[in-house]
Image (cartoon, rainbow, N blue to C red; front, top):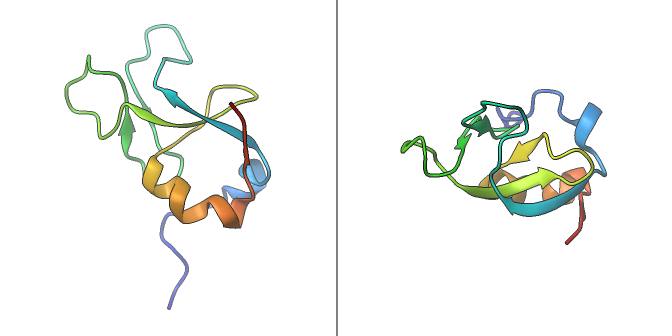
Length: 85
């Protein structure tokens, strides 16, 4: 069985990072969505009408990297994320 297609080097920036569950908000002015760092699912609020999810996991130290709930479940143990409130 091969490596998961969603793994593309994220271990260099995401191992041990603090994450928090949050409703999506733009991290840059004018942004209307972000993508899951692993599967590229669209994460947005209801404005776009085509987002896969509106609530996901985001890096708590900079609020810039989003991870969808499915990828969070699949990779939480492997990446040893620290969950914060």
